[in-house]
Every structure is written in C-alpha cells, then in structure tokens.
Length: 198
Length: 370
Image: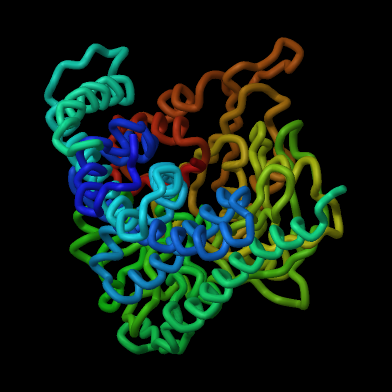
C-alpha cells in the first residue's frame, strides 16, 4: 500500500477510523485499560493524547528530515524521538499548569502518563515508515490521537454500562475489557473501504 | 576500521538535541514555573510568611519550620497532612479526593502535600502545631527490653529542649538505606517523663521487614545521629477525679509509662490500675519499674496479664486475654476513665468490654498503633 500519496485529510480520517492506532495496531493498551473506568477521566486523557501526538509528530518530523537524515543518523531515531516526546510533554505540563488551572486539573495529571504511552511513540514511527509529508504527519498525529480518544471514551462508556452487567467472575476487570476491545476492533474493521487505499 | 567520526557525530547530535531540550526546560522552569514571591497568611493573619511560590504547601511550610504531621513524606498516600485552606488553593486535585470527606469539603480542608502554592494563600494551622519542630539528636543508649522491643534513648543536640505532654509521640526520621530510597517517618510514643527535656526515650518493637524497625534493630548504634520531629498527638491524661484504667500491650507501654512518671512528679494521686497484656513472661518488661511506681503512687496498681504463659514461666498472676481480665476485674464503670494504647485489635476489643460495663465513649481515650 502506498501511504505517502494520501492527502492530509484522508490521513486524518483514516487515522481515526480505518487504521485506528489503538484498535488496529493495539498500541497504548495499558492506559487504555487503566483509565477507561470513567468517561470523564478518559475524555481528559484522550484530549491529552490528541495534543501530545499532534505536537510530537510535528516536532519529530523536522528533526528526522533536517537533522538525522542529512547526517545519516537514522539509527539514533528511537532515542531522539523518545527524548523529544519526554521533553515536550514536560514542557506542556508546565505551560498548562501556568495558563489554565481548570485545564490542568482535567488534563495535567495525565500528561506524565502519556510520555510512556506507546501509541504516541507508535505514531511517530508510523509517520516515518509510511513516508508522510509534514502536513500529513501532523494530520496523522492529530487524527491518531483523536482515534485513540474515540476508542477510550467508547470503552469508558461501555464499561460504565458493564457495571450493571453480570460478568462471570473469572472475566471481571481486565479480562472483559480485553474482550470488549477485541469486539470494538472488529466493529472498526467495518470502516475499512471508506477511505480509498487506506 | 571503527568509524570514529560517525560515532562522534551520532553521540554529539543526540547530546545536542537533549541539551537543547534541557535548556528549553531550564528556561521554562525559571520563567513559566516561576510564581514569584507569594504570601501565606496563617490563622487570619496572626502569622505571615513570604515564600517562593510553585512548590507544594506541605514542603513550603516545612521549609519555614512549620511541621504538619505526614507519614508518607508528601506523596499523597497517607492522608495525614490535612489543613484548612481558606483561599488561594484552587480546585481539589484528583489525588486529594480519596482522603477528603464531605465535612472536609465544607471546611475547605485540603491535603497540603497536593496543594501548590501559586498565589497568596490563607490557611489555618492548629496552634499546637507551631510547637512542632525538628530536632537533631544523638543515640545515647539502646537497651533490650524484650527479645523484640528495644528502648532507644535519644539525646537532643546543642542543649535543645523538647516540651511535650506525657502521652505524645514523635516522628523518627529513617534516612535512605537499602530498604528505602527516600527518608521515611515513623511515629513512636515518648516513654520518658516530660520533665526530662534534654532527651527522649522511645520503645521500638521489631516489625518483620519494617523499614524503621529493621533500621533500628540492625543499623542503629550508640553515637549515631537521628532526626526526630514532634511532639504530635492528642493522647494525654485528662483532668478529673475519676479512677484511671490504663490498658496497654507491647510497645503501648511507652506513653503510659510517661504518664505515670508525670503523675509521680506532679503529685497526681488518683486511683489507677494498669493492665498490661502479653503472651508470656518473655514479653513482659519494665516490671520492676512499675513496682517502683506502685510504691511512689499509693493508688496505683500494675496488673500484668499473660494470655499464653509457658510451663516454665511459673506464672501465678492474671491469665487470659486482656479483655477477659478486664471484664473479670470490673462490675460497673461509673466513676472511671480509660486510657488505651497498643494494637488496633486489642484496643477495639477492650473498648467493647468498657462500653458493655457502662463507660461512655467520651471517657475512653486511646492511641492506636496502626
């Protein structure tokens, strides 16, 4: 499949539905399972992921193509991407805390969690493997984050309903959550074909 | 050949990117996270502090010499460092909520380790906390009371004096060592008399794998430096003419011993009976000191009770669980007051006995060793 020819809009919607990073690539599972007990906190975490993914993709793209590739240092990519993710998340946390108390309350405590969210790192890797342009990379970051957010909020909604369901004892907690995630993943497969070549 | 040039370019580039980010963070820390000087107004302005903002309230106050009781050292996991914040604290953080009750919420009580000082702030600090200070001490002696309880005497350095009421506890600061990466605080009741202000005696019972007790039992030597802070607590003898019932087990001996010595020194001659629960003779300690106190305090009686005396103990004193001994001893408790110190299990069971004998809640005082 040739990903590099897709326009930003197609990449954006593709990242949300047809190749949702959580439900098709199964990345970012740990926070997905841990924070999806309440809709409110999953919305906060989802918003933080959208923000961080968009930002780290936008930062890592120029670093890759203007520093690492010209110097022939692609093999250092993993280390550099991680440093950039960790540093920028820290910076964002400080700014959010200063600028908006209420946003910090809702979002701030999730930011350190996101540094170690593999979906963020995965999004960086996919944008290079798929040779996206800068705009497509940015769209992929935002769309990927939004897709992750959609998945976790849907999951939180389902788990809220699950509270009243009778789950076999052996499947309570993470067990049933993983089964739900699998069924959601099947449902999202239904979106494939909506966007040509994606 | 090893491409040394490429190696340096690689390391240099990664280092440069990290350095740029570090620089940006340092600048951000000095500008964005710099909240400047803020004022902390305590108890309606009876005390004003000017501090650098941006840090948690608990550590800001500690730096200013005001010690709020905390067992976890500011990680938000013990829920002890509650303070009423009248204004300037902002919304409740999710990390505070597990500890905040409805009543706390109405009184604007916050977890001071989770509240950042970002602007002028008004707080209420109970007067008695101002008396709490940190003291540097030196271990003067370590004595084995039983096979698993040690008496540690800490001499205060630089002729400092610790003012406290009998029954109070202090926090022992365990420095970082194998079992803990950060210093931790553990509470111990003072067993020495309040009249002795230049030193404190603590009774420390070995808890298997306990961070503090392992430190005390395996590392602590005479001459070592130890930091303590205090005094804390609300356990003390109330003024009244009621007969006193003391109940303790294990290192619960400590505050009771302090109270008894205080009674001797202050000439309090109320009728008092002290029930001390232990398993066997090898768990009993300070028996001679207690008999000494019986001579000095005419109305005082020490009643050790063993639940599992061993055959060669030749025990002819009280036998059975402390609750059984208590219910054998008293018919109706209508002019009594009870003071209990020890494990939660022992205290809860004894309180049940007292209540069944007619002693109301407000005359039962206890210090649970959780």
